[in-house]
Each structure stands twice: as structure tokens, then as C-alpha cells.
Amino acid sequence: ERDADYMAWLVSAKGRLDGLASQVQHLDWSAFTGFTAEESEQPATAELAEQPADSAQDIAKASSFKDRILRQLSAVQAQLNQQIDETTAALGHAVQNMLPPQLQRPWVAECAQLCIDRETHPELLKTTSVRVSTDICGQEVDFQQVRAKSIRDNFAKFIGVSAESVDVRDIPVIGIAGSGGGFRAMIATLGSYRAMHQAGLAQCVTYDAAVSGSSWAIAALHTYADGNPCKALESVHEAMKSSMFSTSNLTEFVNEHDRIAKHVFANIAARYLLSAAKIDDAPADAAELQPGNAPEQATLADRILGVAATQGYRAIDALVPEKYRSWLDTGRPAPAPVSVDELLETAKNTLRSVSVPPLSIVDLYGALLFRKLLVQHTKTDGGKPELHLDPQW
Image 1 (cartoon, rainbow, N blue to C red):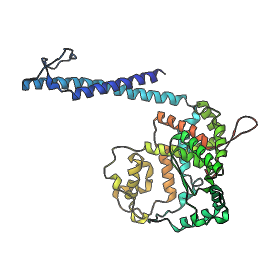
Image 2 (cartoon, helix red, strand yellow; image 1 turned 90 degrees about the vertical axis):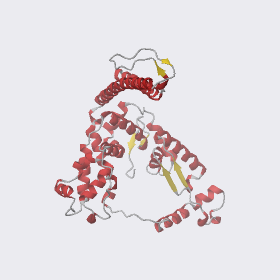
Image 3 (cartoon, one colour; image 1 turned 135 degrees about the vertical axis):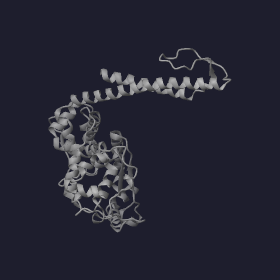
Image 4 (cartoon, one colour; image 1 turned 30 degrees about the vertical axis):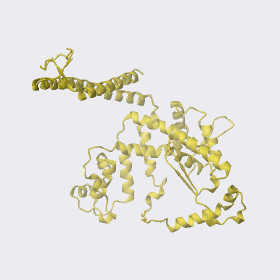
């Protein structure tokens, strides 16, 4: 609490000092005369008389006086910045030490590695092609036709006509887009879906799209809720009976539902750990170094540097298998493409090795608490809800 109060004071003081420095920098000092420009170790305290500057000597004196003030302000700014950095670190370690052992760094790394687990994500082993066209593909056209037939009765009911009078070719393609905004957006989107569901419109939708918080609503809606927003809202209601900001609530969640907690937290942890591996001083041409069109056509250096452009050079040592180091150094083609197993293993090593500031991890725990809303909470006679994670989540 003391460190937090001190930090608030430091930030406020720095803001006022920055404002003062800006005023000094933009002030018309040529209008001030009648002071000495001699260098002095003592701060200048003499009042300045605002008078027209009549000579080049007066202008030089004004400029020298301005520079002296700016140097003094800069020295104080540097001291404040150092104090802010030290207090930030102290706060981070203090909060980290308050967390229970199971929420320390190793747990976060274990969560992140679920994102590259072959059993959890078998699609990692598949090959993907990219189709370039100005129209939707044939499979999508077929899907829209099948969807139109399946919603004909619901659409007819919604517009108040008989199903026999509706030609499926006349059924419009309806999409719903949900905005971002954290758990508030999730609740708002579920509420909107409930109204549309009760009106019969939601049953006529072909596409759902969402970002951020609303994607949580879509995830709940199309997994355990079976498309029924009322069911999803019931779960959220049960979840919010306990405080979303309680450290004990978080500890209990991880202790009693460790597997669920890890899966819910996995992509946040992986994204954060990889972002921690980035650095700002990567070569300017790194972004232009992309992997070749096919594995056998690209040197290992091309492939690794393409990764480095997005993940940062700190990750290089962990990403490159030992047996390929010499090819990376020489730029010669590797003897064989890096296998999926090797890529997954080196990615896991990266997630284990990246160091992360403690305070930022605490911020991520806050995101984990909110994501509890995505897990199905079923009411029980004992008063404590049971938690379930849909395999398709």
C-alpha cells in the first residue's frame, strides 16, 4: 500500500514536471533581459524582467539561461524515472509473493504449452492451403444452401407465413456481429441473443462473428449452451455469485479445477509469453525475411528469421534445434525440413525459457478470472456450482 501511494505521487510529479519542461521549451526567451547567463551550481532564483531584447548578446544570454533550466529539469526527470522503475519492480515482486505457489510462473508455462499439444490440437499436424478468389468457394455455397433448407420453417414462422410458401432461394443470409469490451460485451451480446432467440430471429442466422468479449459469448453459445442463450446466461449467473476479483476465488478455481483452468488460460499465457520474447531493436529488414514458398525451397535461416521477425531474437536460441545451428550460421539449405515434432518441441522450450515481469502475469490472472464465465457452471443442491468444460470449447 505504501509503494502504491508512492508510485501515484511519482507519476503525478513526473506529469507536472513534463508539463513544466514543455513550457520552458516553448517560451519566447528572447523577450527576457536583465539577468546573468553565467553558469552556476545554484538554481536561478532571480526574477526576470520582461523587456524587448535589443542585442545579440541579450539573445545569447536568454538562450544560455533556458539551456541551464532545461538541464536541471532533465536531471530531476531522470531521477524520477529511476524511482518509478524501482517502485514498479518492487510492486510487482510484492504482488507476486502474495500469490499462492500454484499460480507462479511454472503453472503459466504449463498452460501455454497446451496451445501446441498434439492431442489437444490435432490440426497442428495438418497441411493448410490458401485459396485466392473474389468469390466464396463451392463448399461454402453448398453450406449456405443446406443452411437455408434447415432454417426454412424458423424463417417462415419469424415473418409470419407458411413454410410451404417460402422458396429457400429467397431466404436472406443473416449474420450477427458482436463487439469487443471484455465481460461486459459478453453479457450484452448474450442478452441481445436472448432477445433475438425469443423473437425467433436467432434461429434464422447463418453466420456469427465476434471479437474479444463477444467471442466469449459465441464460444459459450455454441458449446455447452447448444445455441440457447438462456442456458448460457444461467451459467454466467451462477459463475458471478462469487466475487470475480477475489484472489481466494482464483486459488480455489485452480486448485479444484486445474485442468479446466489451464485450458481456459492456455492461449492467453502463450500469447503473453511469446510477446515477452520480442525486442524492439530487431534489424529493420527482419520483417522482409519470410519463409520460402515450400519447406524444401527455403533455407533454415530463412525460416528461422521469418519467425524472428514476429517473435523476437531472444527466442532464436530456443527455436533452433542444435543439429541445425551450423546451417543457420552459414545460410546453406538444411539437410531436411524441420519436422512438426521438432517445431513443437522447440516451441515448448521457448515457452519454458522466456522470462516475464511478475506484475504483468498478475494482470493475466485477472483475465483468467473473467474467463471463468466461459466455463459451464451448473447449479447443485449443495449451493456450490459444478464446473464443466465442453470438449469443443
